[in-house]
Image (cartoon, rainbow, N blue to C red):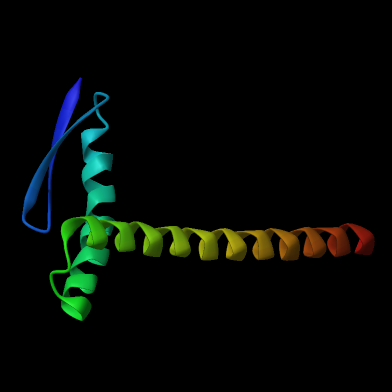
Length: 88
């Protein structure tokens, strides 16, 4: 069992994870840290709980937008493939 030490907004979090997953966990924490730092710049220190919640909501919003783009691209790809097959 591995452990990753993550620092967010001046607080240290020690998280247990599977062997080899600590690097991924740190990469993910960098995404959270970037969102959190942007929020602190925009709104100031409004509390760790609120900042982490807002960060999570912004990341979830990014994820939903990315899923929508992937779905649109999959639909476009399917149409292009269908047209290519029809032209053969």
